[in-house]
Structures are given as C-alpha cells and as structure tokens.
Length: 225
Ligand code: APR
Image (tube, rainbow, N blue to C red; front, side):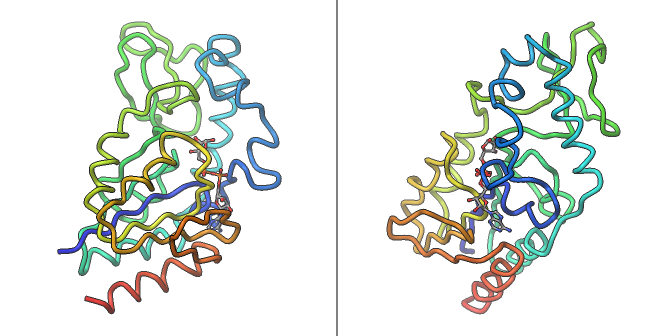
C-alpha cells in the first residue's frame, strides 16, 4: 500500500478559527516569542506564559476540525496515511485521524517541571499553583523555542517512507520541522498547499486554502489507485 505522509502547520487550522503565527495580524504580531514561548519566559513570568496558552486553549475548545482535516482521513481507504503536525491543537485527532505525530507538543496537555510526567488538561485553564503529585508546577506540554523536538526522528523516518509528501499550511520557517522536506527522498510527488507559499524548489504548489485544495487533492490521489 502506498504511503502518504502529511506535514501540517497553523494554516490547516486557520479556517477553524485558530490564528496562524506569521500571517499579518498573526500571533507573533501580537506577542514576542521571547515573552511567551521560551523556558526563560516561563521562569521569568509564568502568569503571562500560562495566560497566552489559556487564551489559545479556550479558542481551541470553541473550534472544530474543518473539511481539510476530515478529507485527509479519506486517504486511508487506499493509502497508508501518516500525519505529522507542528500544531499543538487536537483538530486532527478530533477529525478522526489516528497516531498523529506532534512535533511541538499538545495544547491540551501539561507536563510536570520536576518529573516531566504528562497530564491532560481538563477544561481551558492551567495556572500557577497547579502542581503535579510531587509538588512540581505544571507547564504546558509544548516545545518552546530552544527546546528539543523529541518526535523529530519518528517524523524523519515517516517522511523517508513517503511515496507522496503533502505539506499543508506552514511557512516552513521553523527548524528542525522545516527540514522534513529534505527527507522526502523516495517521494514521487511533493505537494505544498498554501495560498501564499513562497517555496520554489521543484515541488508542486497549490496556491489555495486548505479547505478548498485538500478535498480535491484527496479525491485525485484516491482516483489514481
Ligand atoms: N490554508 C492553507 N494555508 C494557509 C491558510 C489556509 N487557509 N491560511 C494561512 N496559510 C498559510 C500561510 O500562508 C503560512 O504560510 O499557513 C502558513 C502559516 O505559517 P505560520 O504562521 O508560520 O505557522 P507555522 O508554519 O505552522 O509555524 C510553525 O512556528 O511559532 C512556531 O511552534 C510554532 O508550530 C509553529 C511553528
């Protein structure tokens, strides 16, 4: 069975109402990365950091997967499907996707700052004073800038197996995630879906929004088998 590997970024969740980072008016227009998305920021001002993620978690709880998330799952009718995401939302899972590889963590999980044990966050809030059973402050289970990306090796192995590699809604600005495109050495097709893509290097680019382009691409791939 041929293997379709998909790498997603914030753009696939944009039409579910979740903000992207580097589009005009995006999250990094409103916040400084060094204030809300680094370990040093959390040590310096945990209230500000936890609030940044509490706001995004509230938005996530009020959002739903869109047609692009749902369409990807149809590929399993005729392909092996692996989804790798940079997103910390759970919209892929809530659309029915399984075994999603999260490179940058999960917004609805917390992690102990002393044992690294992972917990799910019930509701939308994670606050100062929320401790693990050993008395350690809980932090968002997300990968902050400067931290290791634990699932990168798994992601690389999957991309190496891809016969089709589809990249949806990412500016490919953040490393090491952006290097995944270099591992698609066995892919017959590398396809980028992004209305504003600035990529160039010999790949197919579909300059459309995810909810328009993904269902069409899925139908095209299913018709080939
Ligand atoms: N459909 C498809 N693509 C879209 C859509 C849409 N409806 N709307 C926006 N895009 C594209 C934008 O053109 C842009 O190229 O999605 C991309 C979003 O890029 P970023 O905002 O940089 O988000 P992303 O690439 O996921 O960022 C990667 O950076 O800040 C870190 O950890 C954070 O995981 C994030 C990482």
